[in-house]
Length: 217
Image (cartoon, rainbow, N blue to C red; front, side, top):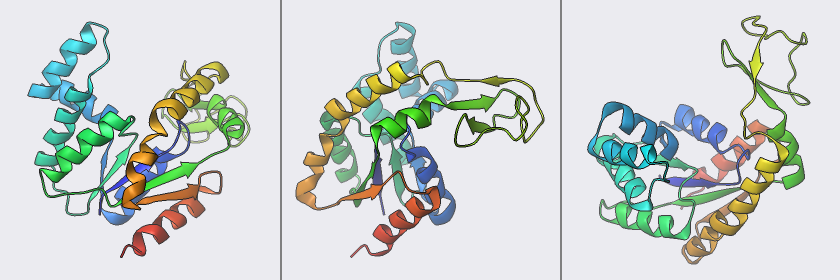
């Protein structure tokens, strides 16, 4: 079973993708992770991508598609795959279909994590991480037990992603609405789009996704 998780940045796609990996033996295909791995190992596609990035340019859809094809050919996908954050545009959705059909595969489910944007901004903008053990925290939802001290390793220093601020998050949400959300219309005729409330408890989101997959005809 092969699925795509769709939702704006901070909706919880990565968390749910990892749970599908752990619970169902699926392979998580995150283009960001794949890109970094390809560059590190020096694969043919990785060399192409590195050349583009060194020029300060965005990696093209063709390179991303080649990267995915490389992974599809090299990975054991008996448990199926879950795309986290891809496709981001209708052009990428078309390219993905071509890749899958050429390998006798298809997308079985497109699962959308619906969120309240104002709450999402608060959720993302409040994130911070221990610089030593990388444990994640949040100003409001998951503060450290002792202010300024990591619960896990007792480290005293923390960091925040430079793009985890309200202005950047709202720009990313706008980008999502204009470029990524329209892919739902692309998949709608196949009747494989399902919506899940992404604002409920993480375990409840996982259960809703499991119910969708377990009732696959």
